[in-house]
View 1 (spheres, rainbow, N blue to C red):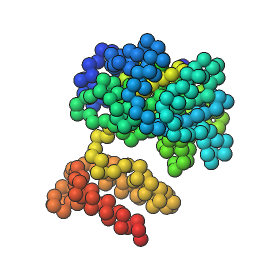
View 2: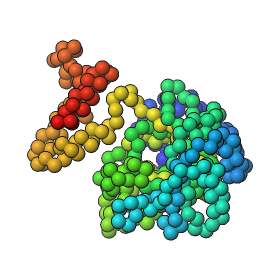
View 3: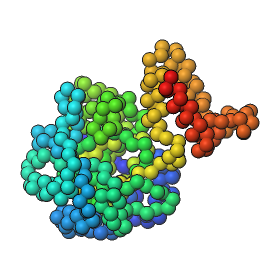
Length: 337
């Protein structure tokens, strides 16, 4: 897959300028070496063991969720063959145990994949964020730590925007624009590793007979190969497959949304549409598509200029918290019927 185009790289960008840079784009960007001076990055450049020991100085013995994938799966975190379960075991473990396991297998030619997913930095590693996280106005992110060895996380999307800081080891992201969803062969919506629906394509060994449209997805894909100290901007809703390359890799992510939390998760609207619209005859679905385009996707201020401001209700832009609460309460009551 060498033909995949590379993500744009920006060198020597001060951290303070990153917000303005990402406001001007809707595509991924690598900020080369933007967190190279962080203590954890410098520890990792000394050795993986130095980085692990540095991490553990902040750990207060709160159990973390870790995953174990047998060597035969070659690091792929995925479903079982029947797609009624997963190919990994999950457990609550002490972080010392997780790191010990990683170093036991660090020289294996075909190691099991050992992986700790999104782990909130301040809860589990208090103090680590003081010198090892992005503090950029006006972003107020949820900051998390991810670590493991060689792993392959299937393509998925996140609603929040993300500044992903590769601090130890190497990672590769393969990213797809949101419009490629139809070419990625997405699995079950309500049952997926990590709780977020994923592509069923094995990116390292794609079966183009079974997944022919995946070729179109690849044509639109971008690849980001991250060295220690690199920061990757992942825009909201971009699908991304992530591969951990080395025997010890650490990532620190920063997620944030552009709208107030009181507006809720857009996933909820999709679930409601699956319930109420998806089974309608095609003509009715198209009619509702026109309604959604008018009220949601293509709206502007002029659409409601004929309605007095005090009577605009849920059409108020931006939707304020009072009207959001009224709308949520109305939905809850209707769903009870």
